[in-house]
Length: 88
Image (cartoon, rainbow, N blue to C red):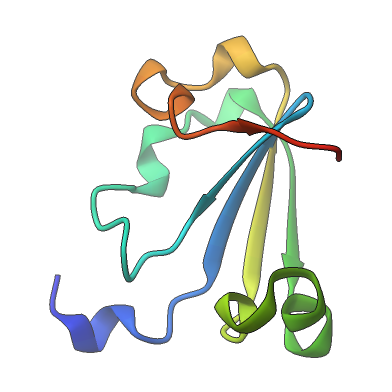
């Protein structure tokens, strides 16, 4: 995708149990939300403005979409390797 389409995109955070993955659309061009089936999603939250930058620094300046997955084993295999252990 052309860079001009990606520069104002929000950060995408996937949470599953005690694991976390952060995707920056400017760097992770291969990540597409359509890899996630709707039935595995527990919740979607949006952070913007000061809340986003307080939580994710400068990377969150265009907002943050937080997608909570019901269980880690439901995350598509090709995305599981991008998760790290985190205190949620």
